[in-house]
Length: 314
Image 1 (cartoon, rainbow, N blue to C red):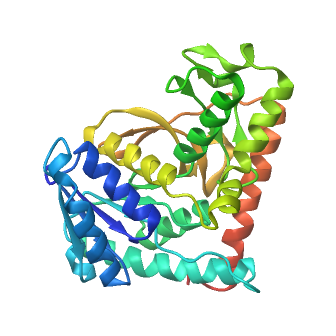
Image 2 (image 1 turned 90 degrees about the vertical axis):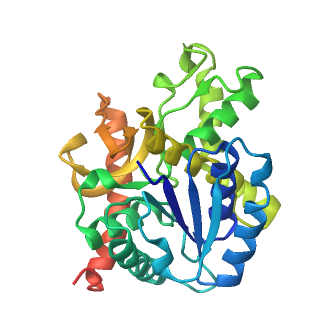
């Protein structure tokens, strides 16, 4: 990637934290923050830009005053969307965020037609699907960030349980970004030692439950959604694509026969590199895990069907 330019749509807590994390590691040349509230984007770009004197490289941080300022980005991260409020139904939320996604994606197609899109907006798997359908791009170029965050949350819960191996814990999950996520302790490890040889089955069930409730628990204490861990998870994925590092990361991607499914975006392990998704890794799932995966896929398809029923894709 020659330009090494990253656009971030949505300058809220998550988008700004991702921008700050990328700036601190100095892995890209330029970060552009874009938000419907231009003052928010300007202020945060200035604040983050003033921190670059202490970063490894002089990353340029700018605010986009117009969508055209997202021109020629190598990667565009989309965090824009609204949370569910009051009497809003799931269908209401889906339509609102799908329309936002459609507008953003149209701008990306216009100004950065060669970019990789990293979708972070919720509901994650469905919004990633929307981005696919709006662009019609090669499926390698559109990725949903979910497993990077959920895996980090699971690693945190594992460390809290065992008390050692911080920074050495690798957790793998598949499925949707929600209550139907499927942690896989049998291929998770601490320092290379399989997790199921370290923790008991009961402890593992507690770790899984706490991982699934990880986001809600933070909201309970903060009164708002998490942003440090999501922001860092975004940055790790962007850095992997910028550096062509070929890391394995669970991500929401469009399946085309893998795991027995087509035309649905769901979290599975993939190899990330300069082309986006370099490879989808197909795990050999046992019958119990296959059944759980089907529940996860079906829940995503239900959301997609709501959009279809409302003629969103017409």
